[in-house]
Image (cartoon, rainbow over all chains, first blue to last red; front, side, top):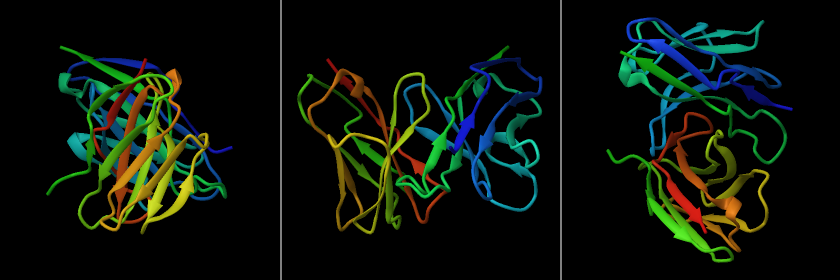
Length: 117
Length: 111
């Protein structure tokens, strides 16, 4: 079955330190991978995506993600965290199966990022 | 440019009632998808419509239905509401499959 796993419910980082939010996936075929951020009582905001090409993808607000095919991972990173980065982060993969949800997104359960001053 | 707009932003319904949620996609986007996000979970796919035809359906009961209009806006209907239908309902639009832009959602509370 196709799936996305975000192994950490919460990540705590001090402002100015680097941050990593982990994501692993399981799909058949080539993965299309996405990261979204959700602020309280808001919808999802797109951060970045990997379709093909360079394994290091740069996105919005200084975030980047590294695609690792051998480890089936797509971890989100930022060199220097800001307090305003505190939010809920979702990793998603496009469903490549043959069922009714083909082409749509399968989300992880989310990771709460807390950046302290 | 206006993004994906959803209405209403919040509503409260009683068990057994019916609800209609609305979504207007980004201008030029012909695909609309609906997702349900239960508190503490990631969004789950409900429906996708493209050019007014259903292109995909997730694992949801028949109480859930949707449609897309000629202007590409969409409605999600839920009949016979259950307490478990309480969630944030998200609409996303795209030019093609993948690369979805989400609206701010409709928070449905069933009491």
